[in-house]
Image (cartoon, rainbow over all chains, first blue to last red; front, top):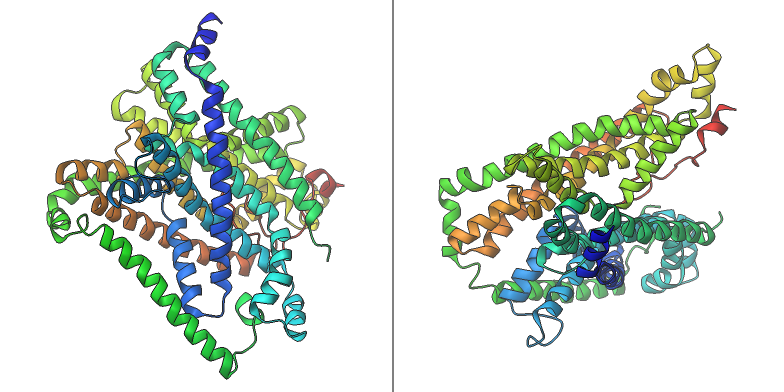
Length: 227
Length: 298
């Protein structure tokens, strides 16, 4: 017990999980924005947009997140010298931001698939009615289709958000000090405590993802369009 | 709703002109983005960076062993996760409350914990207890992590597959004098497993992608190969690009197989299965509302 408390004073588990939470929140926001743009492109009447969106979704969906994280950390940041903040900022800031971008890009494809399945739950009559009263593509999407599609896709979006929360561990590979990296360091320093360490970290994720699942299930039931 | 056909009218002359302008602007924008990226990476994708990949040794010493390790880990994991997953799924459907609760806790726990944490834990546990050493420990770590997570996912697939079967299937089984267990084994499970086939193939994609996490526990898979190639030849971007293409091609082929399986299943069975993967898959239209098995039995 003493060694556990000593270990917990050596390693700040809470701040590691705080990093996980930050990655989740910013990654989720980015993924929602990007995913919505991709979905609108995907259903747009202009073939170039829908083909480009389909290509993007599939390529991202079939690439491991680790590779996407590497691409942003090595390719975009180190080789292209592009970042979201001035390049003079500390290195950890860039790793964090590139981690967020990688998470946002990877999960945007899942968000796009969720939204597309949400659009599929909207009856054809809704779109036909929107056209019949003279709304154009943008208007019918904005006013009629997407609001219902969002409500219909809350359940798969919830699954995507849970997956995102767990996938934040992957950015450990580009050196962001989140829970998986801290767990690895802890195990290397306190080999005898490997089981308690795993239980602590796993419980942390259960605490993060379980309420997320409950909230999304409740919300999807509440928001479901009665038909 | 077929999105493409009902979301917008057949374009008239004005709309067609607008679409054409948008298409040109869009093409220029997308092309600009791609060209800009290639320009910024021009030093990294210069011809001499590709030269190592014309050398057969690079393929036989790095790429193919990496691919082999990736496929090996994925194959073992799918097999073990399949067996464990079906057992857990059946356990969760069991009328033995203790067994059902235990399976439930197991499934919910391992669905909530990131695969990477399980891999790191299993890897170090094997190293410390000397059950496996060296690269065997890496492989075992990857397999254990993938097995636990995917078994939980498959257990959910089995459960939702059985729940989605028409009530009459259970009733008929019980009516001809089969016990509940026999009904499950002989009537419900075969149909459920067939119904979950497409979702199972899709899960293969997730497994294959997740083998890349083995990178962090020095499993010599494809990403590790790319890492070694770039360390030797200084072509980071090109090496990772080649590996990414391999991943995309394999997964794309798997997705095609999943699509085929879905059509095949659609022609020959009565139930549908809701995908239980956390990597959200779109729900299948026409899905029956899921009922708890106890209600189906009544």
